[in-house]
Length: 188
Image (cartoon, rainbow, N blue to C red; front, side, top):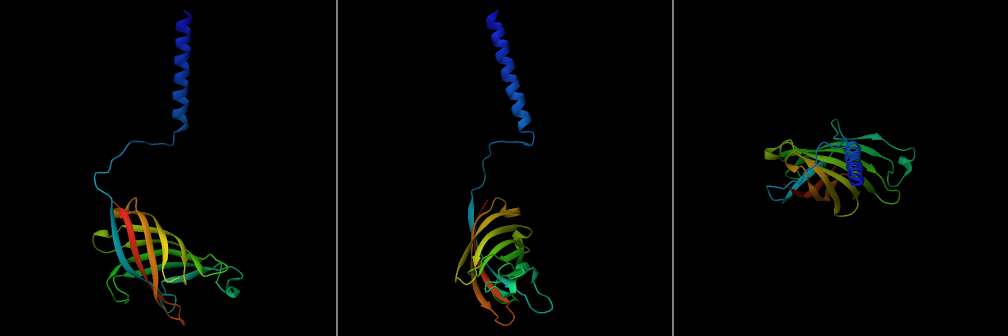
């Protein structure tokens, strides 16, 4: 009799643990082991980013600045929204492959360092509709800057990797710039 009471109590304890743990994960829809049928690959892309801040149709506009931004040597506190053209060559009339959409913010007091948060949105070929997301530090005056790829969508779902940026030209009067981006992206 004592053994059967002990077994019943043990069963009740076990059932209460299962029920309470199920309720604790009510937000979990499913969890399963997955295997990837296709191998991960790395693609290397090169585009040219056209950052136009001047003229009647700028692709980069200031949305806010801090009270001291105009007196800061690094324009600290400036935030610029972008919808910049991405092309296959450095000339603006080169074939368009997409847009760089997001923002950059001057985030360093002592050097020209930007926080870049942007998506490369593809509008051409088999990648049309896919995106690569970049979030990182861009030390503008360095010859080569590296930023991480933090994700993507479409054909770049689960993307990871890095980009390297090199400024090809910057007009000292207008501040319009052309930047070469080499993208090394791992994806499935």
